[in-house]
Each structure stands twice: as C-alpha cells, then as structure tokens.
Length: 140
Ligand code: ADP
Ligand code: MG
Image (tube, rainbow, N blue to C red; front, top):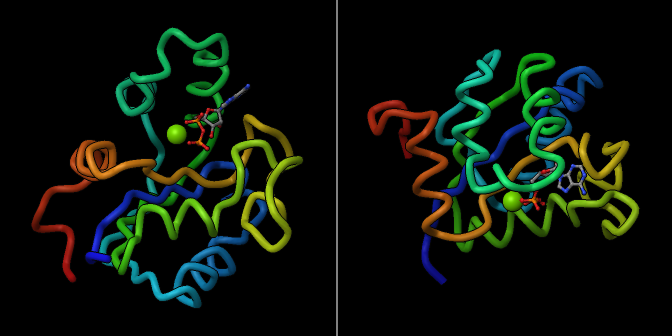
C-alpha cells in the first residue's frame, strides 16, 4: 500500500468539546502524521464549495450552517493507506452506527454534527487538500 495524503477536518462540535488533542492522538497512534494544519473560521462560500458534491442533498443548507458555526481544524494527514485508515479511525457517518472506539462513536452527537471529516477517495483527497492548502504549506 502506498503513502497517501488525506484531508481531515475537526468540525465545530469537536472544537467546542475541546477534544482536538485527543483526536490527533488517535491519528498518530494509528501511524498517521499531521503534515499541515490550521485552525480557521470557514466562510459560507468556502464551506459551500468544499461540500459542492452534496449541493442537491436535503441536508446541504444545514451542513453549511453547521460548518460555519465555529472554528474548525483543517489538517492534512499522511501515511500508509491514509485515506481508508482515516475513515476507519473516524467511524461511520451516523455515530449510532459507528464502531466502538472510533472518533464518531466517542464524540459525535448526531449524523450532522459528527465531529470529523475525512476524504473518501484519492481524487476527492486531492481536491479537498487543494481547496484549503497551498502545496508549500504541506511539509512531509
Ligand atoms: P462522511 O462525512 O462520512 O463522508 P457524507 O459524505 O455522506 O458523510 O456526508 C457529508 C456530511 O454531511 C456528513 O459528515 C454529515 O455532517 C452531513 N450529513 C450526512 N448525512 C446527513 C443527514 N442524513 N442529515 C444531516 N446531515 C448529514
Ligand atoms: Mg463524505
């Protein structure tokens, strides 16, 4: 399996719960490395563009409102099979269905406010990383 990069976001609920360090520790324990990070307040346009793939979904407005409700932590994670590994550490989208010990099982309160984002494929990872980071902000 090759070394990959993936975009991770600690969403506003995770920041409010003050579990940034605990979440990053879970990535590091599984061999992922934070190679870029910034804590920012997203604009509505940034959140809408980032989630453009979900524009037609009934929850799109709610999702954008939530993502701009407070600061988020944007990170690029790097490691062996990083995309799938991050998704495994995150757990299922709906915390009620997330496996024990996953981030969403531990910290998420609903399918909407589910604490973390993670890219789901190499093409989406490339788009999502590029949406928030310049190449010279990512240092392996
Ligand atoms: P994931 O984040 O696990 O990749 P999706 O890509 O399907 O999940 O959805 C993107 C985000 O949209 C989810 O993480 C969640 O915040 C929100 N979302 C997904 N499904 C719903 C839903 N049924 N109701 C409200 N929000 C949702
Ligand atoms: Mg997704």
